[in-house]
Length: 340
Image 1 (cartoon, rainbow, N blue to C red):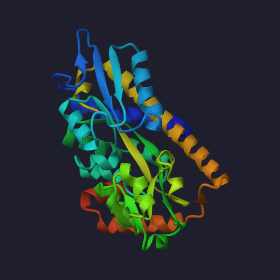
Image 2: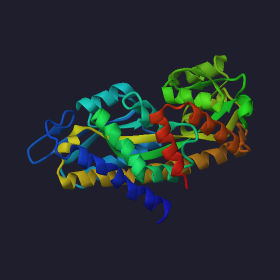
Image 3: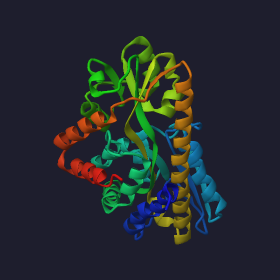
Image 4: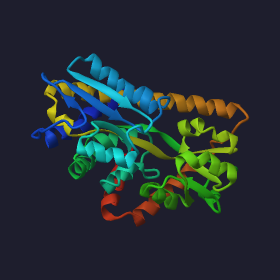
């Protein structure tokens, strides 16, 4: 079984708890408008722009596959946080005002803290490792516990790429972070990552990142390649260090409208998500590789591939083992145990 086939095969497994947890439910569909004959119009929200792989290879694939199946489900995508920020949207999915959403694991920690560990530094080796964990009993338990805590089910999980450091000097070993003010997102898991990696974290809104780097409010930052490119950070930073210190994990979520689907509709939606997981992973891999190759050959970035990843990983894993609380440590250790 190749990597793509394996990624597709476990999405149905991720969706399985939703059938168990909500199969006896019922009630109104909330954000989706249910008509006679089991017809639905689903609101599908994301924070991603229309040129990002989460949209082009993810949300639109789900929309196209579901609608082409002609099982009475129409999907309307609302990208770019049109329906609110992460915290607002997950609350809206739980209440039924939004039907589907794509969220990063760290943002969901506000609802169920252990799920945020999927965004821990060096938790995963790569996208295949994420797939293996999602298919494991331990991974399934995390998604089931998240559903119990939130009323929201996970239909699939994908990797939206690895995060790397940029600065005005190389960051190829943990010691290189000393004395540098590095911008991290303000969610608790990202701030834990900063501590684990030995970085001094400065919270800056993503929308203000370019200006903060330009003005020297922060010395560096960390993001996946697609974000670094979209923000044109080469205009205000000189060095890209390929630390790959964290996978961006996205969960494809659905609310109580799942209860109202018949078995055929549930299968169609699950299959569409399976295809999207495959497509996003492939799109991210291809786009990241092409962008890094272009940057390495050009003069806009000094690209550093000689990163001591082992040193970063050993430091981060050791820190988490000593500092995570019991529930979060259990998830972290179960992730590490499924490494290829």
